[in-house]
Length: 197
Image (cartoon, rainbow, N blue to C red):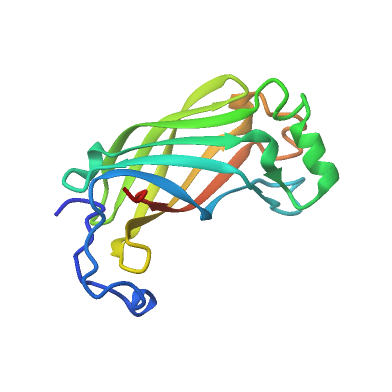
């Protein structure tokens, strides 16, 4: 089987609570599970530390093709105002016009355009990232962690990890560069569920 394929019944101890007849996630449309999805990013601050920030509110739709995973696609929408640095005053600055300008640009979006296999359960996903009205192609390294039918919830689940990097200057969010780093590392952990019919 191709990249991202998951052998049915190969359930680890960590997944022992799943149904014994666990199988690969079926093809279809999945939604990001609100309690288990994370977008985190980091950058160098004056060479002194690497703050880690996240967005608390975002959603994603995955069109999963189990037979041909490279034909799968994902669409992501982030509430730009939901940024969370852990410091309220800094969050207010980040929402302002000198940074994300959430009043005029309330959403950040990502639309995948291609997926390429790099290993048994890994690949690279390229897509269009739009921040403050600026759209740039971004490539993420993606790993499919697991897919199965959850007997308890009576629905298919699938989980991914992804990493990537962007330059904030590409999107007009470059205040204080180069004192504050331009390179931003992105870390994504997301579980998707197929809605019950």
